[in-house]
Image (cartoon, rainbow, N blue to C red):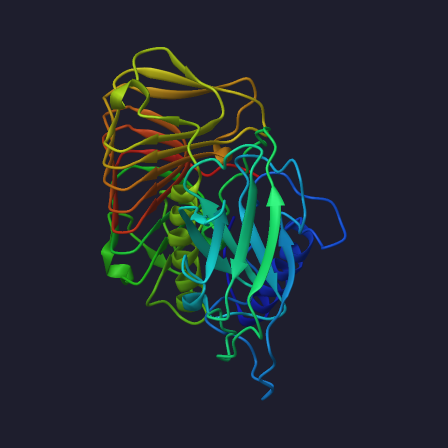
Amino acid sequence: MNFHWNTAQTRAAILALSLLSACGARLGTEDGGTQADGARIEDGGLRGDGALPDSGLATTPTVLSTEPLLGATDVPLNASVRAVFSEPMDAASLSETTFTVTSGEPPTVVSGTVLYSSTTAVFWPRARLLSHTVFTGTITTGALSARGVSLAADHVWTFTTGETIAPGLPVNLGMAGGFALLAKSGISTVPESSITGDVGLSPAAATFITGFSLDADATNTFARSTQVIGSVFAANYAVPTPANLTVAVLDMEHAFTDAASRAPDVTELGAGLLIDGTTLAPGVYRWGTGLSIPTSIFLEGSATDVWIFQIGQDLTMASGASVHLTGGALPQNVFWQVAGYIDLGTTAHCEGVMLSQTAIALNTGASVNGRLFAQTAITIEGSTIVQPSE
């Protein structure tokens, strides 16, 4: 996907995303049926920082709908809890203190993470909900609109879990999904690498994209490279590229938090060492330490199945190691959320979206079918990265 942005296209993209959010969020209403599993946040054009034309009217925000619904039963144990507001909210005011989930009497607080985008706040429990239990969701008057107006009263509703597990949903990448490589402080290559998809860097400037022999377009909104089948964008290029990259980086960080917030199905598998031939079913896997892949592993599932790997330290793939997809599984449904460093050895191969809180390094001849997102830098050496077609 090439992002040759101009002002009109940016406005059209914002409108399209808003419409997709409205159609794709699968929101319940108070008189409808419940929605299984924690739904992802759809990024519309309006963000939680109050990016809204100011009409001068400071209206009182309300909660339009919740999921699960008021009185819902047989809610899946891996569900999220969410609320849709009548207008954009102050993201900083929606947290684990203003959006809570409790059970029992006296109330026991469910540990979780609150994410906000557009007009939707999502509470992701850190562990599966207890079965056959009544839960109470509460959004307090501490929740403020983008104009600083609080709810008129606490919004409270209850729902009851069953004992089912709903299929997982992919992590929403937002505008970051338009890139094969996206980083904040630098992107470097030892030629010749091959990248299919766009490359983005922000807030660092184009001088921190090295080894690509960039050729700036006449518009100065992007550049080209013989190593990139796509376009290269940097924060110091012409308008509207800087603003678009800022949103993409925010969405990258949002995706990292989203992936980290999913309740795990499996913890500490293999004590952080996946032996040769390990086959992993769809689900959420968590390691509090690092994860090492010394040879080959297999992810077996269908085209709609999702894998999320939450890794508390580094992800290391040995030289020649590989991750294989079988049964129709797709790389865009595989997410590696890594708190530390991602290191792929010489000729190693991985599938999926790699979300690193620090840096990513692909050694000579390493390859990825997916995306590389780093909150610091990306280094590749004669590597091949192919962004999935979706």
